[in-house]
Structure formats: C-alpha cells, structure tokens
Length: 357
Image (cartoon, rainbow, N blue to C red):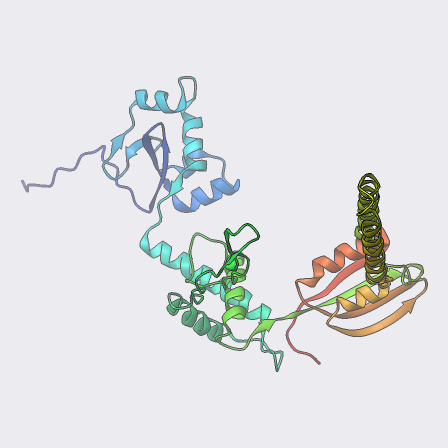
C-alpha cells in the first residue's frame, strides 16, 4: 500500500485572498474576503456577507490562522454587538491589504488618468495645440527627478532697522517670496484629479516645456436694461470717515489754545489755522481719487474676457461669447449673479479650447 501524504480534512487554503484589517481597542482584527466582492460590497452592489467573505471567522492574523477570542471581540466592539455587525464594521472601515502587483496596476491606472487630464487641459502658448501624454510624462519626469534641486533661493539675512524707540525691527519679514509648487511623482492613494491639478501647477510654474492653461469658451447673457448700470462698490466710505476725526482734532486744539496764556495764543491759533487748511486741501485732493465713477456692468463683464468672439442683441437680452481663463469663471459667475439678481446667466460652451480657428 503506497504511503500517501496526510492532509487535514478541515484545512482551508486561501486563494485570491484579500485581507481587511481594522485596529480597535489596541487589537488588530482581520477578515479574509474576495477582493472583487469587497469592492462591490463597499459600493453597495453586494449585500450578502457569504459572497464577500471566504470564511466568516474573525482573525487576529490571517497569515498565522490565529482566530480572535470572544473576549477580545467583546472588549473591542461591546458585549451586545452581534457578530455580523462586527464583520460589517471591519469590512467598511478596515484597510485593504494590496499586493505589489495590484499596487503597480493601480499606479499605472492613476498615472494614465492624470496624463490624460493634464494633456487635455494644457496647450502650447504659440500654437494652442495640446501635448501628447508622452510629452507630458517626460516633462513630469524632469520635474520629479529635479525636485530636490527645485528649491527657492535662500533669502538674504533679515535687514534690521531701528524704530522710533530704538528697538531693532525686522524689515524682510513681510517680503518673503512665495514657494513654487513642486512635483514629486504619482501616488496610488490620491485621486487622479487632485494629482492632475498639482501637476498642472508645477508645469506652469517651472515650464520644462512651454505650457499654458487652455482657455474656456463662455457665453454670458444679461438684460439690456442692466448693461449701463454702475457697478456696486464700497469706495468713498473711508474718506468720509476720516473728515470728522480731523475736525474733532481742530476743536480740541482750539480749546487748548484758549486755555493757554496770552503769549502763545496768537501763534497757536495761526498754526492750527494753517494745519486745518492743509488738511482740507489734502482732503479735497483725496476726494477725486475715491469718488471716481465705477464702470458699468457691461464694461466689467467684457474686462473679464480675454478675447470676445461675438456680441449680439436678442430681444431684451445682450449676449456675448468669448474666451476666458478657467480662474475667471468663478468671478464672472458671481458678478453676473449678484449684479443682475439672477436675471443673467453664464454658460460654459467648451471647457478647454485647444486650438483657435
């Protein structure tokens, strides 16, 4: 009789296993589940735990086949918590162990998404044509390889100047240069959109290749009756508030001069009189600068466009189509909404114009 290999009948071999870990109550609890089913369970497509878990046992270590004692589960999750709720909490809140191959696939997928987004949002400033994902990838490789050297120059030692009391005062504290955004590489645990935004900021700041943000094509509609309306501004309030303080100072100075002696009465009055005339002259010179008439709603809208394609009148509405920077869309939308009180609107015709006709 041939001698065979004794294999335990109750031994379970985990294949295609994905381990979910959750640390709670100074203990780490693990579950062995199917990776694809786990993603479906977290998204809500799968609700049956039997299809998600390879075994319903809660482990302290799946690799060592060390099960979690009931006392540890009660201590961490509570005495009245059912075992199904414990499994659900581990599946929903736990960390998924990802292998090297899976991590590589995730990184490649994120990299492809980032390159697609960046290549569709950045254009050549001269030709207005998009770059291929390969050229964007090479430019980002240059930035990541030189990220250690892409540091701002060290500022000069702070120059100190003495104030009125003779104490040294730091002059260069308010003149610090802003740091340019850096690119250190792709990360599998960050979203592709946020990494694409960081990559575009770094490419525009360092310019390894000539790039610029692609312009948006917008259409603004506004009632004709509101085009010549003045833009609401808060100017002129500061000039009106400063005049009472100056007049109050003159009155206080006048009362002090009246209480003084005869010898200083005439001179003090003359000085105060000249000072009040100088303040009035300064106020009269400052008034024209603050009382300038603001532009109209139409002028403000046109100023936010980089180039205007067309202007039309349709009934009682004025319509303008043009190109603007992506950063100006929020300002334009808020301005039209506030000035027209919801009667005007801003529409996006094209998110990124890559080539001008």
